[in-house]
Length: 112
Image (cartoon, rainbow, N blue to C red; front, side):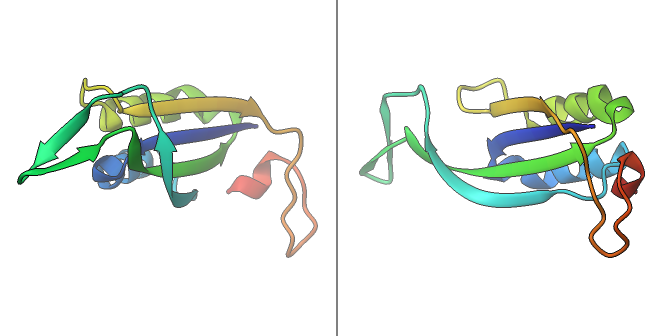
């Protein structure tokens, strides 16, 4: 099993969610987060200067079986990319075990 954690633009969340559903990823958790990025210059909007280094993002945590890894990553990459600085990051890590609390069942079948 794999855990895919991704940080994306909030404006791309709907597109990413739809893309994940299309490849069969129907359960994940998400949070609104604020982070610091590489972009150091500020922007002016309606005469007000603001920093783009502290930017609102959405953090998604997805646990999948190994055979869904590549298509899940591709769905996120395709749906979240704008080609601009600040599109986000994807992190992949191993999950050793998973348990369904209700039944005590363990293993990859608990993700269904």
